[in-house]
Length: 399
Image (cartoon, rainbow, N blue to C red; front, side, top):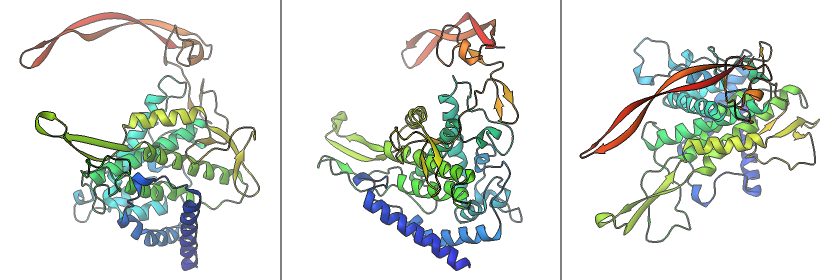
């Protein structure tokens, strides 16, 4: 039975690679052909361990999530003293398959946590002027019950979290923090000028993408819901949005170069593959959020558009299956925290304006004193001296 499950996983992986080669669905182009051999070589063993985990113990049914790695700092494996409880057994929110991957790649776990934390911060930046502002709650579910709704906001959260993991793992490889990966082995771009050197130590986006795909998707792939069920549609939604987040990081990675030469003449350049600033990834996924497609599952167990007049979403697009709540009032059943006490902009007509942010309930006005640096001057050599200026500012909060 166990061997049969493992074999089915291998066949599914092989079929997926064949389909990608036919359709060109893989996210790597000429710039990204150098795959991480260490991770790929261990994939059959990983799939076997995932099969063991699935058969031995079912996925967790509570609200706990691997996102909780961002709230509870993960120590390096070597920091645990002899006789202490193993690292992976201390981490909450992991599915059985994720725990097996944790045991294989313990040094990766700290960077998964850092990646999720980066994703949460970016999510809060992108939605700081919206009714739902990506607030976290103090438990292992991180975002609370609101993530149980298959909304646009949930779609963005899954995507930005997966993107954060790719970003953190790719950079950790480059910095030599992980035992089974190093600098990027991506092949030289064909359009790079001949007299420019392709070298340096690039971010290993290949390993970051592959590992994030195995780890983040493990929880979803462990589930086996009936075709056409609501549970299956949510699983397919999560997988789609996870992939969109990973591809955003992959797509936006670009060539970076450094000049060499006498007195900065730039007679020679060394170039490498470098991750984009994560704010750029967040902006990209926010655009995908605004154009996300409403989907439903059909009898064949595939997602399809609710409105067939729209274009079919690609693997880089976000999808959702439930309409978003209005997030106006605190609601324990949906997990909405409401907008009571939120700052708003009295003069704005956008989502940050008091009319929309406060949902028509009105707002209170108060004054605060802000202290800022001002009249800064540069002094030779070499420091900047500033004065402190105070200003009374009017602010508005929702009733």
